[in-house]
Length: 280
Image 1 (cartoon, rainbow, N blue to C red):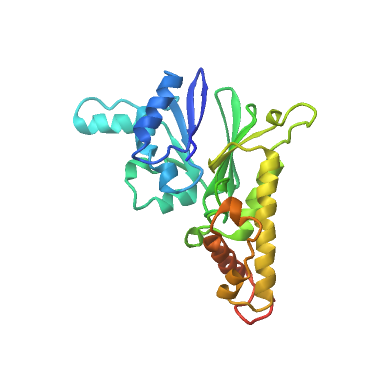
Image 2: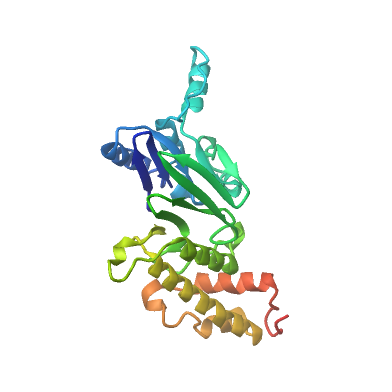
């Protein structure tokens, strides 16, 4: 998991806190970079390896305008600590998916619309909801002045996309999200350097630029189209897998079975008929 932080005079903004087990190391690394308090936590999705450190990092932080002081006593001390903790922002669905995790790490600010914008540390930050992509609760965190986009698990350079069908993910939403990411990211001018464009931070893997996003999006779209054509021809899931719709990409991204299954399932839900049927 990649943790992204923004550090300026007003404090630190953290995008994705990592796992619960890794939280002390993340917090120590942040403190080595800056002594300033964590002011905001942004979750790009509901996965435990992205949100597990929420409670530890938010509690170690402090909101810009501290909470009310309720006096002494253990109960009031706990309430004061909760009031002072850094807010945790996410899409609304993240809160639903985290119901089985400790409540201290739940998001404290959620939104259900397409765009949440705020101004922190002298910079506009856009949190952009990408519905039905990796899950139904993915967001991009776009730091506009810094020209950095944190993409979460919509983009994973190590493997084919993980489309969590049970939590609302879909192949069409994944491609729509990658299209949006390619639109947001500004490519570098070739005569300057590839490092001059927008930096895209994936959920896992190496840092990317706009060209990398387009290449990944094209790979996903090609495999989607191959699976769709096989479904239209009436092939079963086993027959689709046997046809190797991910050929040409397996050496780079690994085993495609889970990805192909997700494409097959979500295309069927989107309106293509099942095995041996015709497309609508």
